[in-house]
Image (cartoon, rainbow, N blue to C red; front, side, top):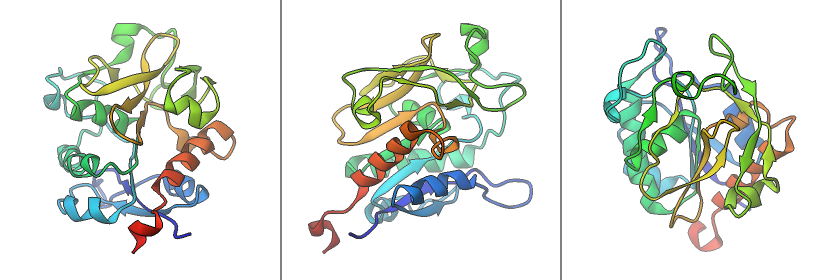
Length: 238
C-alpha cells in the first residue's frame, strides 16, 4: 500500500523569517501511516496542490482577521495573519471540490466555518463566561469534556461519544456556516466539531488532537481514520 501524501498548513511567517509548525502535527500523521508535506502560508499554487495531495490538514495557530466575518477588534486577538488567512481560504476553495479528506484543527475549524459563510465569537469568555475553560491564561492548553453526537461520523470514528481532549482556543462559532453540521459540544454549548454535509470526509475539531494522541487512544483514532480515508485506491495510483 502506498502511504497517502497529506498536506499540513504551517503557521504564518514569524519575526525570524520562518514558517513554524509544532512537530506534533507531523508526528500524528506519521503515526497514523501518512506522509506529511508542509504547506507554507502564502502559497498560491493551490490548484495543483489539491490535485496531488491525498488529504489536507488545516493546522491551528493565531486568530483570524475579523474583517473576514464582520467581527470586531478585541484586545485578546493575536498572531492575525492575512497572508495565511487568504492562502488557506484559497486552498480550501481548491480542495473541497476534490472530495478528498480534510481535517481542520482549531484555527482550521474556525476557518472552515468562515469558508461556508459562518461567523465567530471574538472572545468566548465575554459571551459564555468561564465555567468551562477553553484555554488556560495567558494562552495554554487545558482538557475539558466534550459530548459527540451519537449518530455522527465523528462518533463512529472515535468509537465514543464522551471525550476529554486538549482545548486551546478563546474564540468559537457564533453563526454556523451553510452546509455544515455541528456534531460535538462543550458543557457550555460551544460547538466543538463540524462535519461538511454532502462530503465523504471533511471534519473540523475545535480541540487539538495532535497534543494528546500519544496518550489518548480517541485522538489517535481520529488521525488513523483520516489517514485511512486518504489512502489512494489502485485506480487513483495509476
